Amino acid sequence: MTRQRSHSYRQPGVVLTDHHFTVPLDHARPDGEHIELYAREVVASGKDPERLPWLLYLEGGPGFGARRFTGRQAWLERALADHRVLLLDQRGTGRSTPANRQTLPLRGTPAQQAEYLAHFRADSIVRDAESIRRTLTGGAPWTVLGQSFGGFCATHYLSTAPEGLTAALITGGLPSLDATATQVYEAAYPRVERKNLAHYARYPMDVERARRIAAHLAERPAELPGGYRLTAEAFQSLGLLLGTGDGSHQLHYLLEDAFVTTPAGPALSDAFLETVRSHLSFAGHPLYALLHEAIYAQDPAAPTGWAAERVRAAHPRFDAAKTLGGGEPLLFTGETIHPWHFTADPALAPLRETAELLAARTGWQPLYDPARLAANEVPVAAAIYHDDMYVDTGHSLRTARAIRGLRTWVTDEYEHDGVRAGGPHVLDRLLTLLDDWSGPARQVRAAP
Image (cartoon, rainbow, N blue to C red; front, side, top):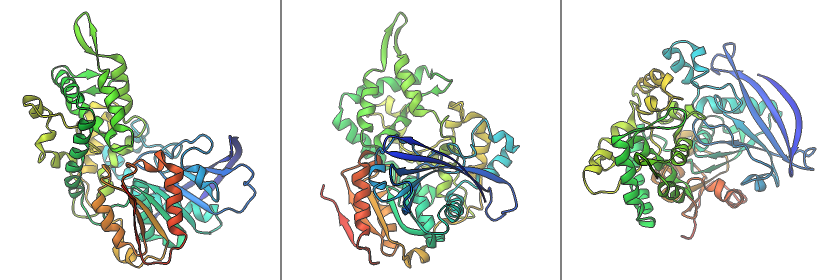
């Protein structure tokens, strides 16, 4: 691996340093093709010369670069008290070698693109992290903080390279060790329905508003700025908001300003359509759509096969046409990817055949080692959010029991984005759980 270190620069209260690394696309073939990774080092002002322990942050996703903080925002305030932080743009994201509709044609055919993207799951990301660690820390282990999909990566880290870890901190990201993509979505749809019903209980006026918008789109699909085709089904996918702390409120404010009066009659406003575009477009994170089901694929013989689409057929209450034909509230969907995404979204349309090949792909390898996790010796603390819309709480609790010594904080104070919404508090709570870590797990339950 090669490394290039650029100059350091400053923001209020912090010193930042850009790092660029070159790693193998396939770590099993170190002499083959290489890609570039980018990571931003953050240290508190005045502490730059100190030999501080490293904390690696792995963002949620898949397909999102590390969050761009200004100064000591969110959980960084707590982390920088005693760590040097590395914000990694996971392969294919941010300033790391990008993978999107503009760059993937360089790989060749859709089949070649799919083969390339098969190297972008948690197993490759952890091997990237290990390559970086050995170069950056001189071989010293570090702490990993994994949010959502980043927690999936941290669990894989514990399964395959625990010697690289001082500790693991996981927020909203303890995956099932053995659930298939189909089982993940079978657990998800009832959970998403509960989030919908809670939203309508809070904002009962939104029942009619959502139905009116969906009915309008069923008759006249709209084209969003940039060319996204907004159908009633695409409108339902705004339910992704319902899994965050303020998402229900954001959705309410969006629905209340949907229509304007024009010479031709009521129409969806430009402001509404622009805001919807900002929520639905995958232009900034196409890997999220391409690889979302692949992060659950662990049976070498079984393709994911558009699991979310197949499972949705068994939940007719999410069928917009049937809902509009009756009197039920329109149910928004959650963290699900469907074939129609690759026709509606111009950022994904050129990658439709690649997505089909990934959905049909077999040969995926298991990501977690239950035996090794059962013998874990790395201190681990995890925040599990009660009725998390994105990651099934039941799956997370079973995994927590399967990892030796893992300490949990189960709370309904936050939603899935707790580490961002309550960052210093959430991170401090997890670090406190590690203070007297001694191996056997003890469960910690927050008050409602």
